[in-house]
Amino acid sequence: MSKALRLGVLQMPSLHGSGWRIGLKAAARAKGWRVVKGADVPPTNDSPEHSMVILLRDGAQALAMAPSLDACVVISDPLEEICLAVAALYPGKKIKAYAVAAERLAAAVTLVREGACLVEGAAAEADLPLIGRVVGNDSIEVGPPVATLDPGPLDMFSGASARGPEPGHKTNWPWDLFNFRTTPRSLVSPPEVDLTGRARVIFHGPRFSLPAGEWRIRLRFHLDPEDRESPLRFEWGGMDDFEHLELQLKAAGLYEVELTKRWDRPVAAQLRVWAAAAHFVGSFEFLHADVAYLAR
Image (cartoon, rainbow, N blue to C red; front, top):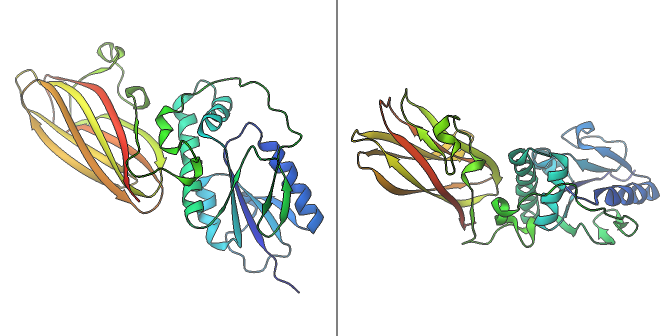
């Protein structure tokens, strides 16, 4: 008896995703394969009874299952279309929409770098490994978008989105992607955070997944310590692995700090700014943050 095979398919959030799902089911049925969701499949391929096409739910599931797959396919769209799709899925939840798109894209970049077959989502058909020709979107009509989302904060995935960024690519993360305590002083643009109080995180976020590589964040801010010493701590990274910088600042003015961190797998990256000790006075104004991909 021939070996049962497993083809994993990770699709980016898409306005025409149903076309590929219909096509995959038809192609699998013609070969006597099953089509299953990733959550219904054991993580190893010890003794499957049937060859199967596995529809992978998200990036984390795709990366976890990749070693047990015989082949993998990534179906991707231009970044602008992915942003329209997640905007429709999460109306009014901008940060959530960006996070979902980034998580899927960072996993897709990893899979493509490791040899996955990359297919354009708008293609009418494609020859996929193991299963052959699959009809994609030749009969699927896409209606007008119901919501929009600026692709700017995910600009590192622009162009051939699932192929990943090129070294030197830089994008801006505006202040409204970050979490901070809301007070009357912070409701201006850009926000001004009152440092008065105990040691604590005053800004953090946005926890957008970035592919493996060396990444730099540069933060520009205005500080007014009101003639007191203001101990601040800046952290850049993800999970429990952060690069950090500690400063003791006393003069009011504009400042710029940068931190660089390398990771080997996709990471939900975030910047954290701490008031590193109790403050009795002072304010911190977030002006600008940009993220740059330095090297693979």
